[in-house]
Length: 143
Image: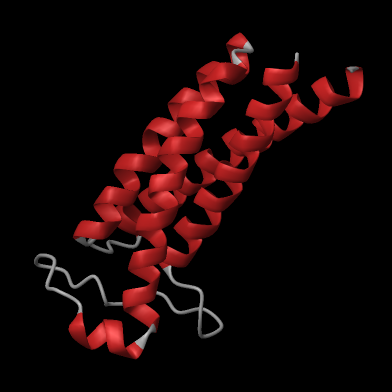
């Protein structure tokens, strides 16, 4: 039982750390590198920023029931990021993607190693938070 609480606490701290890095990373790209976010990037931010606050409050108050809400938010963010990454990297979707504002959602400000773009970074963050939220929820449900 003690081991499960240790895993739950550390996993929840990990999810919070991931959300903080994702939030600071998006702020770095827009405020320091001056990359103008596209419309889908804004949706991803709208889903990521509250996660930082919700998980942070949950970490300090040890209220693990919030993990179900963070799982939902991160799941929606995961799907949004997956769609955004797909329209960047899949040629058929790229050519048929609707215009989404003054900045194209198919544009790639960064392309590290040929596949790492900003939506990919958001996708990884949302996946990590989603998996952590599900595991934390299961551990808190058993207690």
